[in-house]
Amino acid sequence: MTFKMQEGIVVHREEKERERRRSLRPFGLPQGERHFDLDVCSLHLGLRGRMDLAIRVEGESPEAIPVEYKNSRKAGTHVKRQLAAYALLLEEA
Image (cartoon, rainbow, N blue to C red; front, side, top):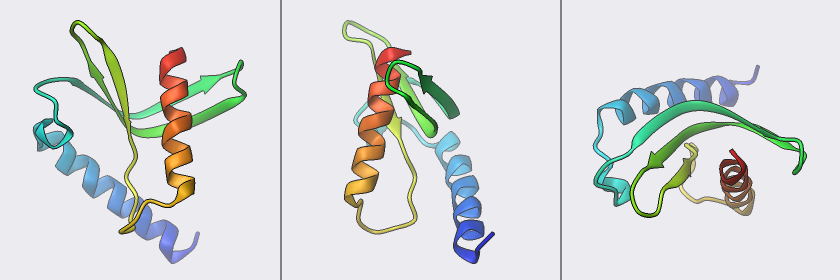
Protein backbone atom coordinates (compact mmCIF):
# COMPACT_ATOMS: atom_id res chain seq x y z
CA MET A 1 0.00 0.00 0.00
CA THR A 2 1.38 3.38 -0.99
CA PHE A 3 1.71 6.38 1.30
CA LYS A 4 -1.06 8.20 -0.58
CA MET A 5 -3.40 5.24 -0.15
CA GLN A 6 -2.69 5.13 3.59
CA GLU A 7 -3.19 8.88 3.83
CA GLY A 8 -6.51 8.56 1.98
CA ILE A 9 -7.73 5.93 4.45
CA VAL A 10 -6.88 8.16 7.40
CA VAL A 11 -8.52 11.21 5.81
CA HIS A 12 -11.70 9.22 5.05
CA ARG A 13 -11.91 7.98 8.63
CA GLU A 14 -11.46 11.49 10.03
CA GLU A 15 -14.00 12.98 7.63
CA LYS A 16 -16.56 10.32 8.49
CA GLU A 17 -16.24 11.16 12.19
CA ARG A 18 -16.65 14.89 11.47
CA GLU A 19 -19.63 14.19 9.21
CA ARG A 20 -21.44 12.31 11.98
CA ARG A 21 -21.42 15.51 14.07
CA ARG A 22 -22.42 17.95 11.30
CA SER A 23 -25.85 19.13 10.38
CA LEU A 24 -27.06 18.67 6.82
CA ARG A 25 -27.13 22.43 6.17
CA PRO A 26 -23.92 22.38 4.08
CA PHE A 27 -25.86 20.14 1.67
CA GLY A 28 -28.83 22.53 1.71
CA LEU A 29 -30.98 19.96 3.49
CA PRO A 30 -33.12 20.51 6.60
CA GLN A 31 -33.03 16.80 7.45
CA GLY A 32 -32.06 13.40 6.10
CA GLU A 33 -30.70 10.02 7.02
CA ARG A 34 -26.99 9.31 6.51
CA HIS A 35 -25.70 5.93 5.34
CA PHE A 36 -21.91 5.54 5.52
CA ASP A 37 -19.80 3.12 3.45
CA LEU A 38 -22.79 1.96 1.45
CA ASP A 39 -22.18 -0.96 -0.91
CA VAL A 40 -24.21 -0.66 -4.12
CA CYS A 41 -24.45 -3.00 -7.08
CA SER A 42 -26.42 -3.23 -10.33
CA LEU A 43 -26.31 -6.31 -12.53
CA HIS A 44 -28.32 -4.35 -15.10
CA LEU A 45 -25.72 -1.56 -15.33
CA GLY A 46 -22.74 -3.82 -14.65
CA LEU A 47 -21.58 -1.47 -11.90
CA ARG A 48 -20.76 -1.79 -8.23
CA GLY A 49 -19.02 0.32 -5.66
CA ARG A 50 -18.85 1.57 -2.12
CA MET A 51 -20.07 5.09 -1.47
CA ASP A 52 -18.51 7.12 1.30
CA LEU A 53 -21.92 8.52 2.16
CA ALA A 54 -25.47 8.51 0.84
CA ILE A 55 -28.06 10.86 2.27
CA ARG A 56 -31.68 9.73 2.07
CA VAL A 57 -34.22 12.55 2.08
CA GLU A 58 -37.90 11.81 2.62
CA GLY A 59 -40.78 14.09 1.70
CA GLU A 60 -42.85 14.98 -1.33
CA SER A 61 -39.93 14.21 -3.62
CA PRO A 62 -37.84 11.53 -1.89
CA GLU A 63 -34.27 11.36 -3.08
CA ALA A 64 -30.89 9.85 -2.30
CA ILE A 65 -27.76 11.96 -2.62
CA PRO A 66 -24.32 10.38 -3.12
CA VAL A 67 -21.37 12.02 -1.34
CA GLU A 68 -17.76 11.11 -2.06
CA TYR A 69 -14.79 12.40 -0.07
CA LYS A 70 -11.64 13.17 -2.00
CA ASN A 71 -8.33 14.56 -0.78
CA SER A 72 -7.92 17.10 -3.56
CA ARG A 73 -8.84 20.69 -4.22
CA LYS A 74 -10.59 20.16 -7.53
CA ALA A 75 -12.93 17.38 -8.60
CA GLY A 76 -11.65 15.96 -11.85
CA THR A 77 -13.75 14.37 -14.58
CA HIS A 78 -13.22 10.92 -13.07
CA VAL A 79 -14.73 12.05 -9.76
CA LYS A 80 -17.76 13.54 -11.52
CA ARG A 81 -18.25 10.29 -13.43
CA GLN A 82 -17.95 8.30 -10.21
CA LEU A 83 -20.68 10.42 -8.58
CA ALA A 84 -22.89 10.08 -11.66
CA ALA A 85 -22.48 6.28 -11.54
CA TYR A 86 -23.33 6.28 -7.82
CA ALA A 87 -26.45 8.35 -8.56
CA LEU A 88 -27.55 5.76 -11.15
CA LEU A 89 -26.92 2.97 -8.66
CA LEU A 90 -28.97 4.78 -6.01
CA GLU A 91 -31.86 5.21 -8.47
CA GLU A 92 -31.95 1.46 -8.95
CA ALA A 93 -31.77 0.66 -5.24
